Image 1 (cartoon, helix red, strand yellow):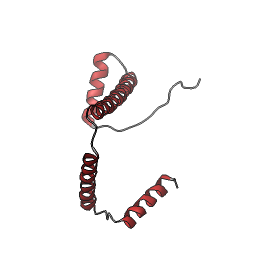
Image 2 (cartoon, rainbow, N blue to C red):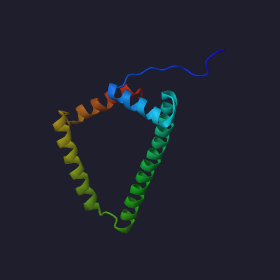
Image 3 (cartoon, rainbow, N blue to C red):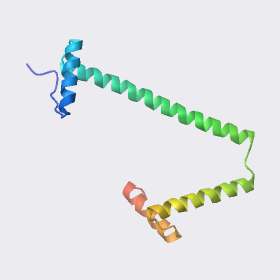
Image 4 (cartoon, one colour):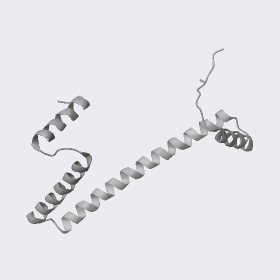
Length: 119
């Protein structure tokens, strides 16, 4: 008769082994049953987290659009914001040791595209 399950192995800190064994005893389950339940709970947690994150992003986009509709930026404001972001990007690049001249930027873009497999 073939097994209906597979055996997997992983290591945990010795104190955690004691916690798992105590919890399994307390719930009158095997460690395998406990592990399967922990996996199901974690999967539900991840699904909820992903939904919450997607909802947060959607709300943020909706708020930004509403703000833009209430008070559109003038051309001068757009220019100032672009300059501010450019300065912030230049500071970050300098901190990371990245050159910001057009040749270096072009090289970085091409290198990145090669690593992603796109042209």
